[in-house]
Image 1 (cartoon, helix red, strand yellow):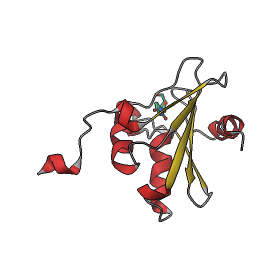
Image 2 (tube, rainbow, N blue to C red):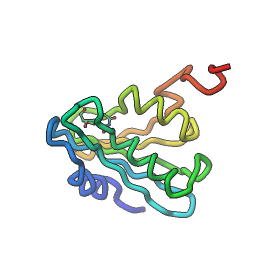
Image 3 (cartoon, rainbow, N blue to C red):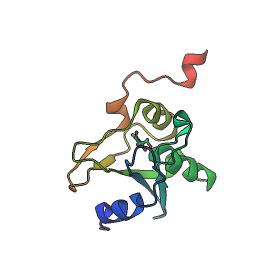
Image 4 (cartoon, helix red, strand yellow):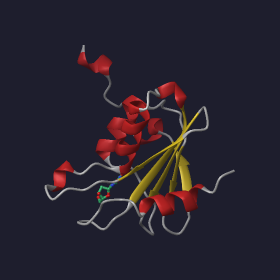
Length: 131
Ligand code: THU
């Protein structure tokens, strides 16, 4: 199996994070073996920043893939603590990946844990709630 920690660490150097200096990377593994990458992209208007999870998932859909194509999402945060997707990303993931897809989350020490968006966002807001 590919060493996703090393891949993520290398990918995180591509993050555009001049303000927080906090580098985050994501790799989405698809059924056909394709790996789609994303990093956090910041902005001088801070709230415009896009997290790595969202740049990655947006690229998956841009390439024509959909929810059913997603096998796993790997995530790396430049922290010695346990990384965790922000609230905005949880809502984004909730709609765009299956709720039981494993999210394998690494920190800078190479420690990881696996969780799902179903675990991270119980009772998430969906399109059914718009009715
Ligand atoms: N960040 C992510 O890319 N993903 C997360 O789930 C948490 C936060 C980014 C956003 C910002 O560029 C930096 O980390 C600090 O918050």
